[in-house]
Image (cartoon, rainbow, N blue to C red; front, top):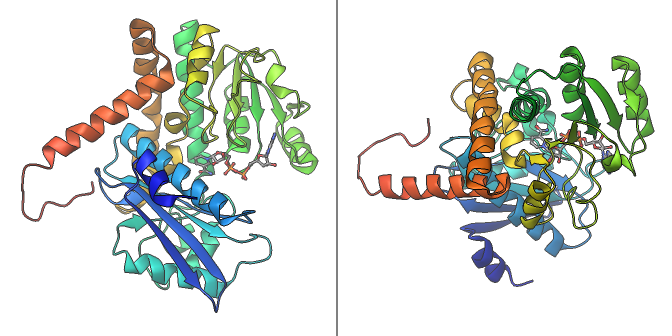
Length: 361
Ligand code: NAI
């Protein structure tokens, strides 16, 4: 692939290839945009079929992090790391320590932590080589797994949807379908059941479905026809590309709000959802809870402060939904406009020279 052309197209600043033969580390770090501050984003590990696929994933995900940080009002930029390898068989202490040393060479330009395929324990090894990490287990001074606070943000997005669509934010009595019952989805289920919603669940892993249905008394659905289930909310908490030209006409819901990244196969899907009267919570806003937790950790973690900011997703989205109606523009497009406005504001502010101003707050 033509990497520079791909960087030009999506506005990336830097792509770093990190290789350590001794430990088998092959990691790509993509830094998309540092207008707002140092790049922050997770480190994914996956057995990519090709190196191009890994580079593209890093480019795509790091761009998403710029949007997520900007929309969340954080002074962080967007970056992402990917490790090429099988998370089940290829991990080692050496690999993550080597990654830690490479992170150290970036001097804080990029801060990372767990993502799909990695967990906090992996970064305990990396933390022996660098401090540019987030999401370490609480025993190591970190804030721990971000699944639950990401779920808090998703539920706030759902409540904002209820408020906008039905005039009352309470999930009680509403039917919600949760797709994907992993680190985030199972907490979305728990929080919604506690709030009195009728929850239906789907996952491709039958064991996970068994555990969650038994634990919360919710009903399972066939994961392959889940989008057609009549419900008030469809909550995608598995993988991206959920709203595609194939599926967009099949949803039988009033609201889509979930944690999965890149839920729309293309921005035009947002227009089609709007035309169908389906309220869409832009993914990078609904799923910002984990990022807000991680950003808080960089200041010395305070759970109350992080939760308070995550609860703010409710008001933020409510305003976005209203403006989307007033301006008659899809929510995803409006969210992107807000991001552009924030980046441009910072460009202007940075013209003012101030010696020693701490960048990240
Ligand atoms: P996870 O890997 O723990 O869980 C994903 C679950 O989805 C698994 O149980 C898997 O079996 C299931 N799944 C996969 N394909 C499916 C399909 N076609 N239908 C139904 N279920 C399917 O991942 P996690 O951490 O729960 O994240 C879920 C999504 O949220 C991902 O897209 C992730 O990128 C995103 N996200 C996660 C954050 C976090 O803090 N963990 C933060 C922001 C976004």
